[in-house]
Image (cartoon, rainbow, N blue to C red; front, side):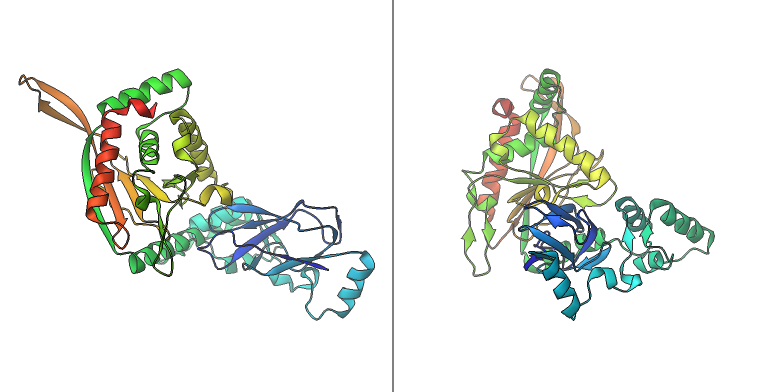
Length: 372
C-alpha cells in the first residue's frame, strides 16, 4: 500500500480544495500520471501518482484538504484494496456524508468568490455539483433581497490580506524614490514592439533592467533565514504584481537576465491572460527573489508596495508624467518622467545599498541600449 500525500503547493494557505479526481476510484494506475486537480487560493495544480496500483480515494471532489494529508492509497491488487476497505476504520470518500461531497466547478467558484457567496449558501442548494447557473441564481435572489452592509471576502483576498499583515508585522521596511527620464526607453520599447511583434512596454524594460543588476546587488535578491543568515540567489527571478480584476497575482519571470525583452513581453502577455481567467499553475507563481510592482494608471505618481515575506526588495513604477524643461540653450522641451519606488527590508539592506540599486536602474532606463 502506497500513500499519496498532498504536497505544499502554496505556503500562504493552510488548506486547499480538491476540485476533482482525474482517475476514478478503484481504477488501475500504471505509473506517474495526473490523478487529481487541487485548487489553492492562487492556482490550480495537478497532483501526480507516486507509483502504480489500484487507486483508493480518501478525499472526495469538492472537499478541503491540507498539506501533508494522505488523500489516497495505491494498492498492489484489488484483493488488497478490498481487504483494507473491510477493515478500515476511516471511511473512504465514497461513504462520506453527502454534505461533504459538494463539487464546485472552477467557473462557479470564481463567480461565488466575486459576489461573496459563501460555501454554506452553495451547500444549501442541495446539489452535489454546483455550476455557474446555480451561483447566478443565488446572486439574483440576493439582489432582490434588502441590501446587506456586509460582504464576504473571497479566499484569495483573505490570502492577500494575510501576506500583507505578515509583511507589516515582520519586515522593518524603508523606502527610497528616484525620478527617471524614460523618453529613450519608451522609444526603444516602440522599436522593439515593431520589430518583434511583441508588446514591449516600460515595465518589461524595468524587469530586464532590474535583473541585469543582480550580480552587482546580490543583497537585493537575497532572503533572510530564520537563524538570521542571508541566503543569496544565483539568478534573478523577478516577480511582477498583476491584477486583472479577479484578485492580485504575482507571476514570476524566471532567469529574467537571460531573456530578451521581447521574450519577457510575451511572458507578461500570457500572465495577464491567466490573471483574467485565474488559470495560473503553481510553478508560475513561485520562486521570485525580487518583485516589480507596476502602478501605471494615469495620474499615479508614487506607489509604496510591501516587501513580500521571504524577499528583501520590491520596486514600483508609476505612470509617465510629461514635464517641460529648458535645455542648455534655453529652449523648452518636453521630457517623459516616471518615479521609481524602492521598498526594502532594513535588516538586510541599508540606505546606501538601496540608493546604489536605484541609481543603476535609473541609468539602465535612461540609456537603455543594453536592454534590447
